[in-house]
Image (cartoon, rainbow, N blue to C red; front, side, top):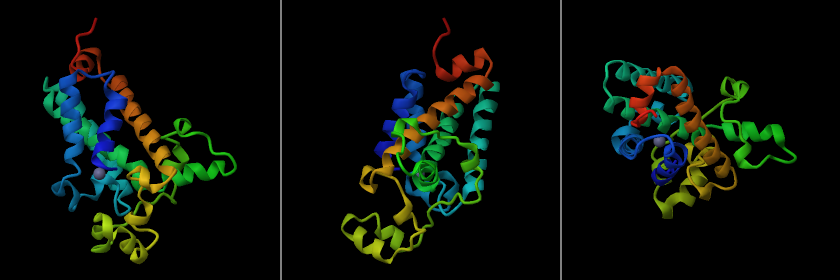
Length: 210
Ligand SMILES: [Zn+2]
């Protein structure tokens, strides 16, 4: 997803839960995954190139860092790990065919985007789950606005260029990817809420428990 969209989604999902300073650190860590350093050789940050298992493992690892950090009374690394974790979960809906698989169950009248289930188990574990492959150099030219059309004529259908739902320009399925990303971000927060003991949780959200 585009950087401003990651930021928007994260604010929408998490601002009721975290202190402003915690939220800013989580957002910064999320957006840092999309710098060049986070793009090259890191398919698992973005579910690129069919790195489905690797990205799933990356999410679990970051969740582990959140827990480990909070056990040592640390906090900063927990926010950073959580920011990285939600970046990957948000990209899942923009870079895989999850949305088209979910919609294909409702071909006649698709429910509105807010009704999407972001964690439908049979789709998450389906052997048909795929993500866009990066074909260089054409997938790099795709990011140059006036070369986009040209690059798409040369890119295969299973490329990132053809498959991505990174922005509203990709058509009506983007609204489903965005809605799923907001819900999944909330889901990841709620999962940690269940895993953390109250003292760790109040340190994580950086708010005094009443
Ligand atoms: Zn990304």
